Image (cartoon, rainbow, N blue to C red; front, top):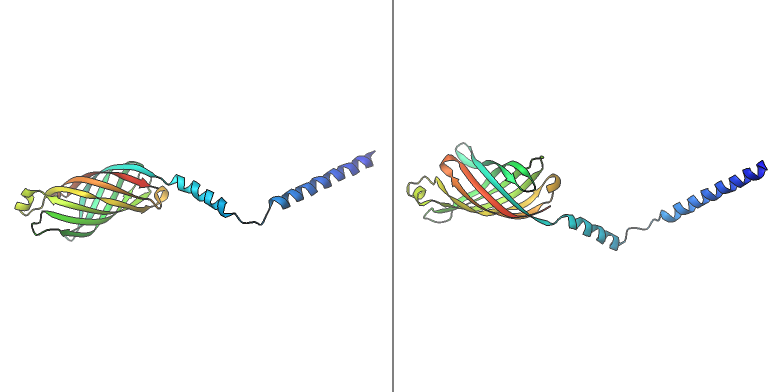
Length: 187
């Protein structure tokens, strides 16, 4: 009786091993993922990257090197990012007319989010100086409009894109500018 039971157990064990081998062989195919499968995966990844409304408020303090304006340090709040700090680096500045009432300034900017992720932007703003500051040649106050393009980032903002349009006011003699901006960001 023990022999029959022993032989029966061996047969069951062999059958279980054979079944496991067959299932493994069938399920471990060397086929590549089909194009339809990768399209579905791409669609899932694309769904997570969608345009989202964004807004911010900043206060910037001009930064000078050897008496030349090179950019600004700023702080404020930005949706999707919380409290932020950052720097602008001026890439160009020039008056647009002989009357000196307007100038265009471009810059590259780094926004540092509350958790340390970064958002990279490229800005272009038109500054319209107040008539009083043009008359006394101080160019000390005015308004600015324009915007910045979101051109990348780190962390959850890696590969971010978007655009924000700004409206602001500057007291340039004090080196202070304030603005708010609205737009969209995709990340």
